[in-house]
Amino acid sequence: MNRIIAGVLIMLAPCAALAQEASTAAEQVPIEEYVPKVIIEGKWGTGPGEFGMASQFPLGYFEKYQPSSLAVDSKGNIYILDFVNDRIQKFDKSGKYLTELPVEGMKGELAGYCDADTCYEEPPAPGQKIERKVMGQIEVQGINIVIDSKDTLYYYLKRNKDGKETGEVWQFRNDKLIKKTEVPAHGGVYYEAPLGLILEPDDSIWIFNIKENNKKTHDFYEIRSAKKYDLSRREEKRKTSRESLGADKAKKVFQRRRALNMAVTSDGIKVTRTRKGE
Image: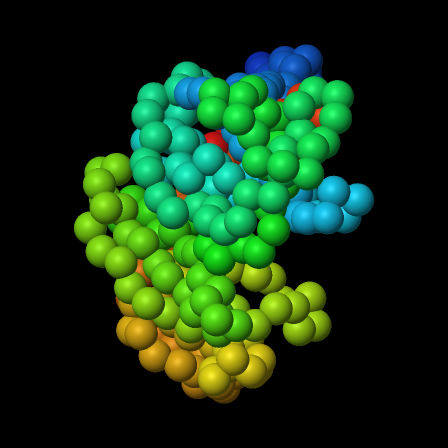
């Protein structure tokens, strides 16, 4: 019996040695860490790859309007809403400028302008180089963009005419405008609710806290169904949409966006790839 056990141990010894070597080799393999990389650096301006900035009149009141919304399609192309310059700019996944999509981004009274050193309470002269617009009454303001799992881009803007606020959603496919739809305006922040279009993991697109008859509510508006929902009906809608889309597809839409970070600097904007996207 002892001879049988000894024989088995002798046979298993090479396997144990190989396992030990594999374990040691695995410990020695370095874990690859993704190093964040700046892929877009856009200066303030109006040219290709530059971005617009504005502030609210009077000059001492610096409520700034600047790029704050980007979206990514399934090919990795990056879209940035440059609403002060009335456009959405498109870059490839490495940050190379490709083209622009014209939109109504900011419309209203141009009360002044700022150059690199000073702000002036007068409209700029034709061809005047400006660093920042100074707006009076704003009639149209771009809010944000989202891209769904089918690569349809949705752009949301607000109109303010005669004291009444309304919203509009523009849909783009293959960089071409295909549809404009009037929608309720969002009613501002309630309990830290976000502004503009909200793309959910189930691929539904919502406006929170919509306005009705120019008054804020706690209701929600879903873009595709063009219907209003209260909180309980909204949760039912999200559950149904999530099941029809599939978790994997919804997850990829969000992974693409979360791989990028956009920051505003004194010179312009920077977009950094913080991790690998899908």
